[in-house]
Every structure is written in C-alpha cells, then in structure tokens.
Image 1: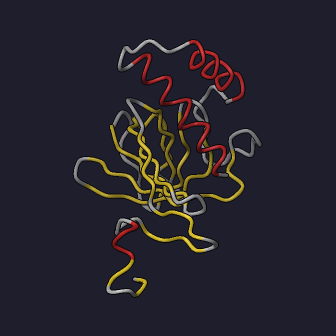
Image 2 (image 1 turned 120 degrees about the horizontal axis):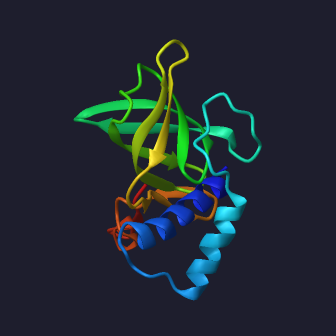
Length: 167
C-alpha cells in the first residue's frame, strides 16, 4: 500500500519539478520518471475500480481542504494522474481546487497533494476523482524506535527530561 503511494509521490515530484517549476531533470531523474510513467496507470481511476494496478489493498483515510471547508473520505485507488476518494459527504463541485492529505500510518508519512476535482458521484456512496496539480509534499509524522512509533513533536534530545524518558 505505502509502496504505491510512495511511487506516485516520487513520480509527481519529478513531474512537477520539470513541468511546474521548470527545473531540468538530471539524466538519472529523467530515467526514473520514464520508468515510473511506464509502470503507473495513465488515467484517473474511479472509486469502484478493481484494477490491481490502481486499487489500494488497504484503503487509507484521506482529508481534504477546499475553500476553508474540511472534508474526509477514504482513498481507494491511485494512479499517475490522480486519486479516487470515497467521501463521507457530497464531494466538491467539478473543477474545484483542493488540497488532499493522506496519512500512511504504517510508514509514518503524510502526503499532501494539490488537486482539482475531475469527476464526482453525489448519490450514496459519494465519491470523487481528483487530478494532481502542482507540487506535492511529504512530512514525516513519526519515526521508528524499535517496534514503537514515536511522534516527532519533540526532537530526539527533548525525549529525555531530568534523566527520565518522556512517554
């Protein structure tokens, strides 16, 4: 699950670097972008697709922000150009820009993707297809310490207070 999301993120960063930021890719980056493009589906999936190349074996919680409004849903399918999200309420209108946040708790990473709504289903179950736009970001939300995830809210040196380990 995380591997698919990580590959999509990597592809989107390389794509945005070249297209949006107008920064030339190195030879290694061009080769990697071409390899990823050949491996990843080239259309925005819908939420009900069962394509093994787009479907997430374990759907992930997704939150989105649109015009000062917060929404939530479940990320079910991913591809090179976009995401398919089952929403808990009516999805935003077609063409609406939004920011999608997906937290991969298994890896302790939150992905942020700027997107635009390209398809929507308003009857139950509600869903939307979004196309990526702009530069995505990735934030580490925890780090591995043995078999326990710890929040990075406190830098490592602040985990020890007065000789005791902070919980």
